[in-house]
Image 1: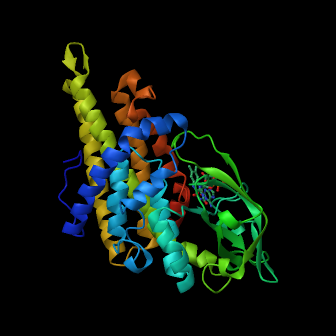
Image 2: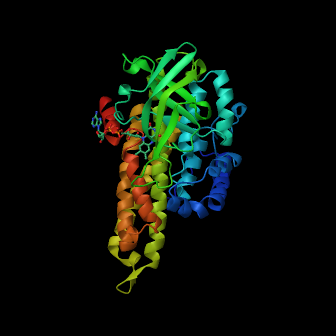
Image 3: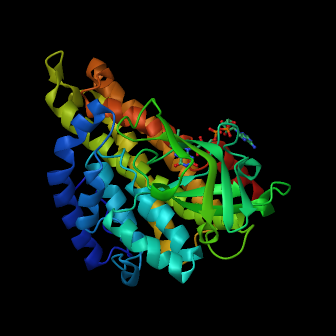
Amino acid sequence: MTAIDLPHPAWMTEDLVLLEEQARRFMRAEFTPHVDRWHEQGMYEREVWSKAGAAGLLCASMPEEYGGAGGSFAHEAVIIRELSLAGFDAFGAPLHSGIVAPYILHYGTEEQKKRWLPKLATGELIGAIAMTEPGTGSDLQGVRTTAKKSSNGYMLNGAKTFITNGQHANLVIVVAKTDPKERAKGVSLIVVETADATGFRRGRKLKKLGLDAADTSELFFEDVALPASSLLGTEEGQGFAQLMNELPQERLIVSAHAVAMMERALELTIAYVKERQAFGKKIIDFQNTQFTLAECKSEATIAKVFLDHCIGRHLDGKLDTVTASMAKYRLTDLLGTITDRCLQLFGGYGYMDEYPISRLYRDARVMRIYAGTNEIMKLLIARGL
Ligand SMILES: Cc1cc2nc3c(=O)[nH]c(=O)nc-3n(C[C@H](O)[C@H](O)[C@H](O)COP(=O)(O)OP(=O)(O)OC[C@H]3O[C@@H](n4cnc5c(N)ncnc54)[C@H](O)[C@@H]3O)c2cc1C
């Protein structure tokens, strides 16, 4: 039982319950003991990817013929929750398995799928998606990176920033303009295998407010000559539509993280207030503590019901952009409120780095910003009014 004790949703099959148990055991044994060290050194190790691959925790939703576990998004959701409950929010695996791999599965040619997906499943390849540029974030159609047609392929030029998995990644999907005169219609997705890419350079691993162990980085592409088969799919100018199709799942991934982080914040806080004393009482015995936690637990429970509903709709192929945007906006906003209120109940210890609640509070902040800011989510919701 965790801090949110709801029965399993209808989509949670026996197979998923087994996956949950296996992932929980694996992460508690292999990841949790090292999370503090990775946090201190500001980066987790490369071998984490191979270990996760060997344990079947990468690309769980990819078909078996391409090296995946043949699962669905529900498998990804279970793994995401376990990562958060294990305190490993900095791991870029959800993006790798739930965002990068699906682009290849849904839009790649047969040859591209066979070439990249099995290696993503083992962790031999680590995926990243490079949309954001120093001058362009929310307004994706305005990217300046170009992939110009050359005699035998493309010449890629541009700079990307804030890229998750930026130091470890060796397969980067780059959002670039194949026709710089156009906005949306000029966008294509170009897949770069960094090992062979002369002119590709990793910039700084960026210092951040939270997610300290994550290798969020700058990436630079200077006259990177790529074969024609680097274009994802066969047709140029499809990139923006492909991005729009996949964004609901990206938003659901962030929402799933947010709810699991609420669960963990509540767990940590309930345990703490039952131990710590003031004025001859346990902190839990103050009515303020009880009411605060009662409110947080109620909100988090409602959040989880909505998340489970959205996952169910997504599994049925019916999750629309507006609903996904509502989940991402509302659940990440709520996560901010809950981690803040929980941290307060720790008093000064809540402000100390060695207390995981302080890390949760910092890690939670970016979730209102990435995968489309919450303001962009509200724009999308408002369009459907
Ligand atoms: C830790 C981290 C990891 C990330 N990982 C990745 C990654 O892997 N790949 C990737 O491509 N990107 C990644 N990003 C980038 C992230 O997606 C962008 O930061 C985000 O999309 C916002 O873009 P921006 O930072 O340029 O902000 P801007 O677009 O400059 O926005 C600034 C402010 O203006 C608001 N705003 C913008 N347009 C509007 C509008 N039309 N109406 C109202 N308000 C508006 C925004 O909401 C925001 O508050 C990551 C960012 C972080 C911090």
